[in-house]
Length: 391
Image (cartoon, rainbow, N blue to C red; front, side, top):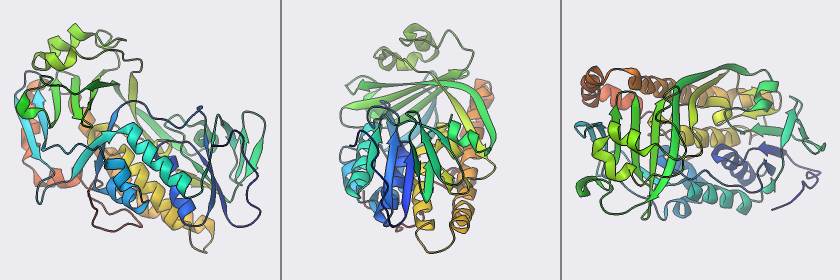
């Protein structure tokens, strides 16, 4: 990887991508595979991921297959037999079988493995990755300014630098940045016998009690990803390390699991981001910078990958860039906006008292219409991919 940017190619179309996360890497790889010269800027000293697991549904798997790194990404994946929702004391509310014949396909991997696979796709396609490179300004004409005072020009600039993107805000594209009022800590623990009952050890389990939420996600043969969610002002539940006794009082059936939790240096807040437009001039915005959503559908990464691949497909013809970007947004935005809204509403279930919430969840678990709406993005065929995906 380069320490400093090299000059852009003198001929052909050139793209600058800001952000080395899921959306940025997917966009960079997809553009390079379609003949663009691409430079990706990552502000950290290396392209890396926060230690956690991630759910991959059919849409994300299709994008990875299109980029040629599906096998690399899922080589150590976990295929759970079911998704379960339980009360804090362990009573089963919803049970959704997955990964069987005719059932929904979903697998989990460590986020680091996904980032590594996407980085491989990008560099194999010829993307130049520049670390310790912080973009501080962008103009609709395609001009980027960096913290070291340097500048670059591009035929296309892709902004994929996260929910708090200042580059996006400088373009005046932000319509709404709506917090859900919930905070989340993500912890990875070694998989070992006894974390949860043996019959459920391979399943994906979410416990709900009061306004607290605990998620257990086996993400490889050796790792389990745990997410703890609580209201923003729930000071007793928030801390580093995790307040073990507080969470055990709320979820006594998960004591063995909770007692394995340690440091929790970050308690992120869930947000939903909406833009007036996904582009301005030669600049396109995607991923959490454009359409962040609470993670209750497990579709943040999948939507970022779909949007990024769709962008590369849209801008790879000979049409005017403005028309291409408009067509990209018109194609990709309706489904992603639906998923954002649906995820936000599912997150609001945490605010209901436990008893009426349990009744509602049991009813929703039997509703085919609810299941279809929930899985619209997960089961979508992303632009530029085939319908069938190996796994």
